[in-house]
Image 1: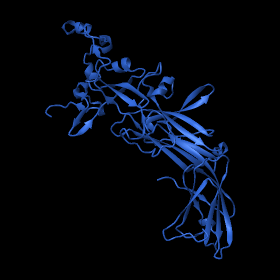
Image 2: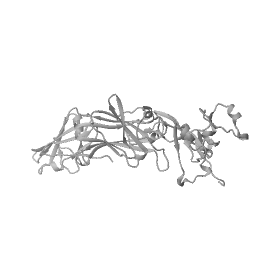
Image 3: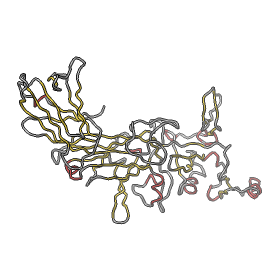
Image 4: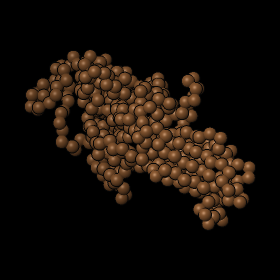
Length: 427
C-alpha cells in the first residue's frame, strides 16, 4: 500500500512541505481547527488541485464552504514541478456559526519529480512515467524490464565470469547490463533538505549488482552501489537531471528464485542528521532475470565441437578430416571423448542483447574444465550446477538432457520446445 503523505496544518504558523508530482498530500486539519469553528473553505494557487473527500450525506454549503464533519478529508495534488521553493500555496479559512472568519491556516508546497525508470515496454529504450512499474507480465503485450546474468567474460584478465567481478573493467561489459534511470526535477536547493535513496530488498540483493555511472572529467566512473553486500545507496548532490545506473544479474532463475527482482527509489525527509529519514514517496521497478534457454539440434548450427581421439583403433582422425568442425585436442579434453555428456548450449536474451551460454554438467571427468577455459569469453557465457550433496550419477551427464523443437501438446504451445530429461529404468 502506498505511503500516505500527511502534512499538519496550523493556524499559529505557516506550514511548509514537499510533494512529488501527481501524488496526493493529505492535509491534517484536526489539530488546527478552532474551538468554535463549524465550517471551512479551501483556496489554492493555480497549479494546485484540491479534492474534498466526503460521505454521500455531506454536502457543501451554499457559500461553497464545507461543514467540519469528522468524515471529511482534504487532499491536494500538483501536476507541475516547482520553479522556486514554496511557489504553491494552500489557504484554509475556518468560520464560526455566524459565518465570521475565526482563523486561517497556510501551507506552502514545493513540487518535485522523482522517477525510477527502466525499459518497461521491452523495446530497448528507457521511457519515463510508465504505469504499473512494479508489475511484470509475460507475452508480446506484456510489460517489465529484462535483466541478463552477466555470465560471459568481456574483461581481459578476469579469472571467471564478469558477474564475479565487483568492478567494470571494460565498457563492453556495459552492453550485457540493463539501464536504470533515476530522474529528479525541481528546485536544486530543496534536495539539500531531503535524501534520495536507492535500495534493493535483502531477498534480492544476492541476485543482482548495480553500478552508478558518475561523471569524473571526460570519462565516467562506474561505482558499485547495490548488491550482495549493500542494500541501500544515498545519492549525493541531487539536483534536476538524470542519474544512470547499470544493472547486472548474478543468478539464473532456479528452484527458490522466480527470477523477479525489484528496486526502489525513495524521497526521505531527514529532520536530524543522525536520525532515519521519513519516507515521503517511493517509486518501484521490477526486472525479470532472463532464463537460460536451451537450443534444439534442429536449428542451423553455427559451430560444432568434437573431441579428437588419436589412440589406435579408437582414432577418429579420418572422421575429423572430412568435416568442418571445431576440434578439441586430446590435451584439452584429457582423452575424454564424451563432450555431449559434458555440456549443452543455450542462450540468454533481452531486448538490448543476446548471447550464447554454455551449460557445464557436474559430470566432471576429463572435460571438466573445458567449457570454462576454452568456451567462456566475450559474449559467450558460462553456467554450471552441482547437485545437492555432491552425489553425482550418470544421470547427471547431459546425454540425458535435451530439448524438443517448438511443439504443441494438447493445444498448448511451447514455442521454445520442451526440455527432456532421461530417467533410470524401470520408469
